Image (cartoon, rainbow, N blue to C red; front, side, top):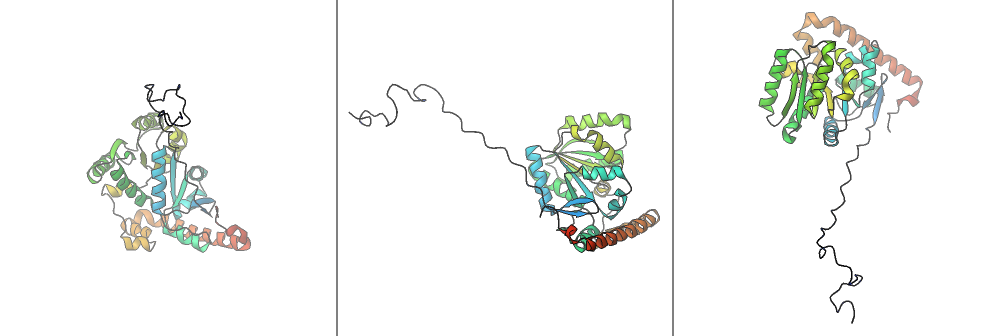
Length: 296
């Protein structure tokens, strides 16, 4: 009699009971492979920095990946003023070199990248990224820690986030006025909160000093310095109309709002930035091989 006639499948011994007949559960399927990190984006080498050639959508996708994998993503943004200042401030420059992503926050930086044949796809303003991440967080139920600004502004921002993006969980919030002695306790509070995103509205160089000292222990996947975005969200200041933004004239709108405080700063930084672009263009013309974007 053949094995098929006895009801025993071919290739299976009659003396060896199956897993089911022995009362054992089948082996569980293998665990899925963990998601792999995205490949680094091509970069435009400008003014001593590598600026990532990413759109706003591309940056949001990177942030999503960081939150899913819990891999840290430190985001830096630069405009004309910051590029001028980083050549005078080694600590500021070092903090930007430590970032996982460096983005063009100013339209003038995008224009300079095209003139210098290191084209960036678009401006990624820090405040636009801030709002987009809150929108994504509302859809996904992400949590945030809001650090910075005055106590009153921080409280208002927390309330606005809760009202406008109700599915975003506020893991923690604190104003930006703390001493060096208190900084360690602030870092411990952020770590304990377990937030998906940390938004810092702190001035330079305090923000850079804090992140350099405590960044690795914060245990937050996405860290984004948002500058004066808390003041805008709280209604203390208004952002330039979109038409001004597209023309790269947001600085002029701010100057019109606060001429006494800002005229000297913009006169100096804008003039210095134009001179820097001219020098970089001259140097690249002398050495054409330096014009190829990084990562291509």
